[in-house]
Length: 620
Image 1 (cartoon, rainbow, N blue to C red):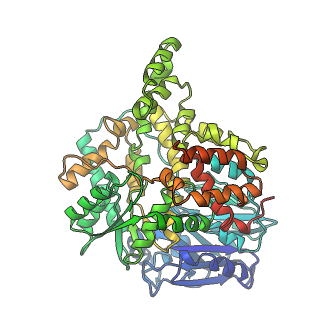
Image 2: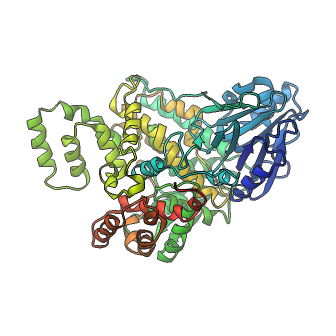
Image 3: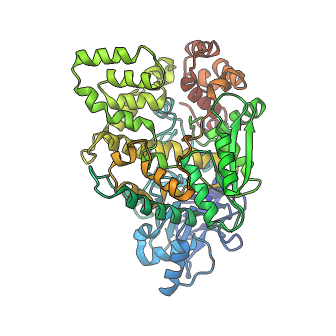
């Protein structure tokens, strides 16, 4: 795990040294750089030592120094690749996974990505051709940003590092508008104008002689079939084997490894398999809250006791929340409005005292149908076929007792657009409400851009049913841009590597070889529940599904003063991003008991970021 960077025409490595200095948290153990003396292209890396701590210095070169590489992440199948390369006559000088890149490039060129299983963003510099290759892993677990202008190219693992390269980068009003709706910056854009993010499963090539970036997709998720006749037990047995192999590969490290155990199905499965594979006692970690009613610490504790794991629990009180939240949100390279980032970061910092690598359950919901909204939306075609009169009667009946399932049913019956309903559910209706809070800087933005981008995904003719469409939408946007970005930043801010067994390529492709409906019924994650019964011997899996956060209580309590600051004197309103008067009314409603946290949390996130990492960027 590292922070990587590169810059053209950087003969003295001044730019890459400055970028490395801003990514020390991503790699506190070592740093290095290499400059091509002929054209001045420089590579840099900050290193968190996981594999071969003594011999894994980056950048890494091939035998004659003609090919150089830097890597952020882990190549999980590197032991097999090293053995293969030696059989082919290559001489390897270390055990580090980064070194396989230069030798695979010698043999296969850009096609080397097809040999890799892992989470990664890497750069390979071919000095003979004066050519750069950048690649990002299939799901987007590791970030990679680039800025191309006037024939030059800079890239880095984080936006704050690109700012250190000397370019004056401006905040994008459209990206801010999109963020306030979605809670994250989506797709290939970034919060900064003219800075792009390399999409998951893509390559970028750049040559000194023709310095225009060229982008190519190298991997696409398969589309699930409409039907599947295989027996459930057969599928569950294959899934167990694949998941066990994925967990085993992610336990490979020369440093201590643990598991983030939320108490739910996904992390319980990972922890159980890790305990069976791990030599010696397993360490597990969980976070709980002094406020609110969303704790799941008992379930995590019971699982740890059953596994004989050494379990550590962190309880976040008001004092920790008041201190931790503004500091963490201010340090993000671009804002992420997922409240779960806060407890995940706190848990990572707590666990870092004992471990350097943690396994988590990210990706299971998007691949195996874990979110209940998939099952709700699956019946939307039936609801749309109801006569309007009958639909109105059903909506009225369902809406008489709003809340929970009745509320969702009322909305489903009354909606003619399942995509809009889906986005309302995942954003807390920010699509409908956030525009009324815009200040002058955002009033000319295209408010419906995220809706249009989402509609293009769900309209794909290859997706044969409603659940498949919305699961594909989450895999293309929500998973890489929110879930995985959150996991990367929350853990790397305290120099801890997080690994996700559910995103192993073969496991993911297996999940998508099965019709979506088989994952969803009768309860969601049907096959994972079958595997849970097989590996734990328990009849019922835990019910918890994810980190939940008491944001409503925090915004009325330890974070209220911080939010009031942003609404009265912070850059958020001073620079014209949002309307102070309307925000003040919203906060007053929240203080008086109405839950407005879905709107207020992204506002708080943006305010903290603008006064933290965002200060380096021009607003106009």
